[in-house]
Image (cartoon, rainbow, N blue to C red; front, top):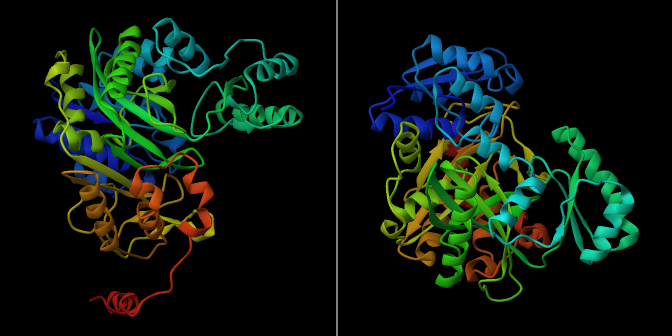
Length: 471
């Protein structure tokens, strides 16, 4: 059993991990930059180590300092959360070599999934369907142009390293290929230090559906799917579980493929196998393709927890301490529907520019599960992701969950910063989302409508006046 856990992260995920650890009787140790000295995740833990500095490079990315802090303060385990060092195999290995428990997948599994081209080759060997494409080592313009012509336009150029849409370009015509390739390679080199790319067939009307998997190093299970198709610039905005209009036979086929993927690399802990699905026709067993595997806990994991009634962080801690899978596949059953919206401090009407400053007033609407790393009076700084909270609504069915989330967002009160709250409400009420007939291009197609700022109502002015008066 883990006795004391260092949480090598910040914000809402650090608070989330601290909550589950505390419920299990595990002491928690936070780390904090100078900008986070009084942050909510610091208050949520039993102890804190101040690493200094403001930027991630000065704090949350300091591998040696984090491991030293764990050893000096008597921690016996490290949980990386997501982001920062969570998918760094060198950090995972260093933690274990220091005699600490690593709450995550083995370093070898992280390495195996770290580069998209190598991961796709491995998945192909494991019998997991992949998008038709070129994943070879030769990277000359001539080779890549010939590969694109053979695949057939439109194609997608994708960096083999990293994620978040960096180093990714869609090419519709042969004469555009060279310019888009140079742009993608330059961006990939700058972002990841690796200019290599792969070429894939572009899937029209794509849906992004991922399978939550969990392993103990020997066996793995799948924990149903999440639909993460509502994205802006390849960044997820709304996630839900289960996916709309998902036939049971397709879910089973995707689940089996995801389990094969996890077991092929001896996966332990929580992970996500991401698939791209052809949404131009009803889903069927041959309409999905492996995209990548995220070897960590995902931002959107709460919707899976809600429909299954489990605690994924608790599962992680149990397995890391030497336990086996908490449940067999036939013991995992979903009930109801859950939707998550990411509430950010950003100005949707101004290109989603981050909004930095103090949260003078913050009150989340009723009926929601709230995962947050800030509180009223706290600061959103320029050093980190400006997420205010993940707001999750669960209901007996999709319509009920959607109604609860929209109401909760409308009743959420925020003053001091611009937020994407109204954008989220407009997105959730979009007719295609309500019908469950959306794809990854919805936001880009209807951006102007979704970001139109309605005129303030008399009620809005009244609320603003009361807030200004401190009432």
